[in-house]
Length: 119
Image 1 (cartoon, one colour):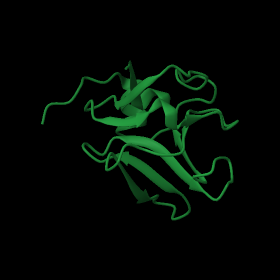
Image 2: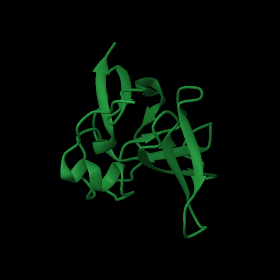
Image 3: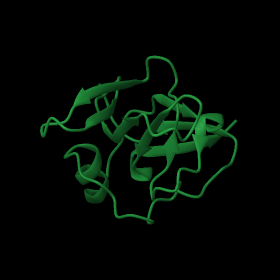
Image 4: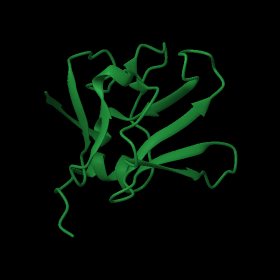
């Protein structure tokens, strides 16, 4: 399968499971209507109506497009990593039970892992 060419910074996050610096992400305070895609393979991951202001410093979503995101236990055994179901690109982590939305779920996603396209 052919993937998009990534910069060194994108590779650090997407392929090496890094984290972008807080407050630096393009989509942290971004609320246009559209769809967020995987930067590595272009798979559709999130819809804008599932994005919410969580108060954390990375984009937050309380749901994903069905089947688009896979949950994997982190190597430390404490957090749950989220990856693209298609190419396994690292997206971030998912947290449950915080009470921030009725769905009680927060996907904390690195902006650098995403591409946004208006509907």
